[in-house]
Amino acid sequence: MAAHFGRLRKGAASTAVAAAAVAALSASQAPGVATADLGRQAAGAQPSADASAAGEGAATGNSPYYTDLPPLKSPNPSTSPSPTPTIGTPVSVGEAEAGIPATVLDAYKKAETSLRESKPGCNLPWQLLAAIGKVESGQARGGRVDANGTTYSPILGPKLDGNGFALIADTDNGAYDGDSAYDRAVGPMQFIPSTWAWAGRDGNGDGKKDPNNVYDAALAAGHYLCRAGRDLSVQAHMNAAILSYNNSTAYLNTVLSWLEYYRKGTHEVPNGTGTLPSHSSGDSTASPDQSPSTPSTPDSKPSTTKPGGGSTSPSKPTKPGSPSTTPPPTLPTPTETVDHVEDAGTGKLTATAGQSFGSKVAVRTETKAGKAVAKVRVRFLIVGDTDATFTGGESVATLVTDSKGTATAPALVAGEKTGGFTVRATVVGRALGGLDYAATVTPRQADALTRTGDAPLTCVAGGEFADQVQLKATYKGAAAGKVAATATLVKSAVDATENDKGPYFKDADGKTVRTLTDLTTDADGTLKLPKLYADDTAGTFLLRVTTTGGATLTVELTVAPAATATPSATPSPSSTATP
Image (cartoon, rainbow, N blue to C red; front, side):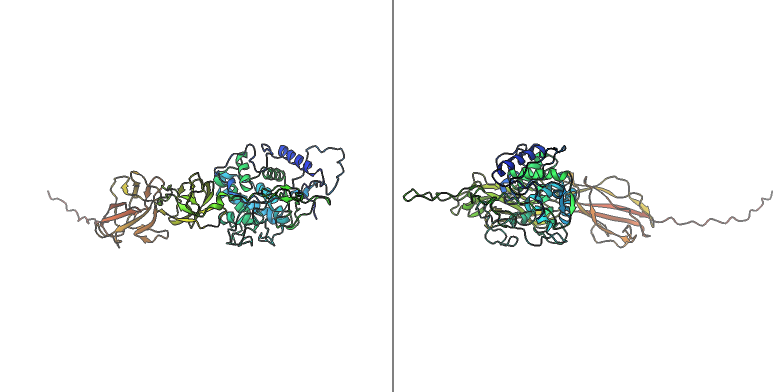
């Protein structure tokens, strides 16, 4: 087996070595990061714009992750001999640790390129995806993926049944993780199914969103980290993004250490030949597909896992007659007491394209008896063919209910796509029926049209009009930008059917057109029509322009008869006057 990344010596010194390594890496490779208690946010990390990101249980459900650290490299290596390792494999140094499997590396770089176009303000470095991929799955188990980027077998985390890890009941009926009782983190980037349901992306263009495909998973991870308008070139935003992935300071420090290591240089290695980490944050989880770990030394004592992820030595047998040490029954969490979700006064969800909705979705979580339940996470998800988002540009938001059991989604902002979509509210961590709210985006509209300029629009038969028709659209007195309009040369003021003679436009092929339907006002409400031409018919004609919203303007066009050539008179022979 290839040398392990930063593998620490086993035995009694392992804890001290691990602590020293984390401290050294935090100091030398991750400036500004504190090694605070597990689960706390690091110093300098500010809450993201989505304050509930960490409270949502993170992308991975805070599943176990690899804790192996990159090699400690000094700019001026010491010439003194290294101490002889006590037990196990020494820390491996060299270029092997910087090698990333070819397809996996390509997926990270393609995700960075895509995010640079879709969210340029995020400044996502592909090395961050590589660092998370290393910590979550050892770069897809050393690059065991096919040419399309799909793992040869699913990568699964442990059951999130509350036994040492988070408690997340099944949300996908086992579709992604094969478990219909509890959720499990899935794939190279270890997404839990409930998060993948809204964060999943198609990164390789095959029409599917597969968490076990490294292209899909890397792109989804990039979008997940870039949520809430984060700029990852800012350290506080970077820290908050990583903590939203797994809410642990130890995790933050480990990821930042690999990030800085990869930034110093990496190289491509063949698929399946990447080095494999061995140490996991889970006591009984040595690999993301749940292969059991072996004790550190032959005389290591077994441990029992606490619900919070810690461990204790086995308790001694109780002496006869001793008081019972059975712990008291565990009280249900607020989430477990929720029976249903009720509407909390949501208004009509309608907005014009490009505008904010006047109402917000608000729900209340209640027990079976109708009592409000506070401190429950509620997820609001935009569903349907729409480009509408919540404030901040996201299609999902998670809020915690207040003391009245109420959670209110951020304001909705309409995009340019018109029509209906759905906002779905569900309780995070419970397989309960949620609430669906119908929302509608209506087209931009204008209620008035005026012509900019009053010069008569005239030309001679068979010619072209010197001036183009230019209009101004307004709505309630303000400029009406991006409003759809139609221009038609009509037969008369009372007959709006298209005329078959008189002035006309030309299409791209130079053919006669008397109705234009693909017109849109500029951002300032201005509409400039194409050049007009006249056939051989003289007279007065009408051009009618209408917009979405009912604004109408009729413009008069005059075509004068073509000039008729007058034959010149032939002079008669001059006669000579007789005196």
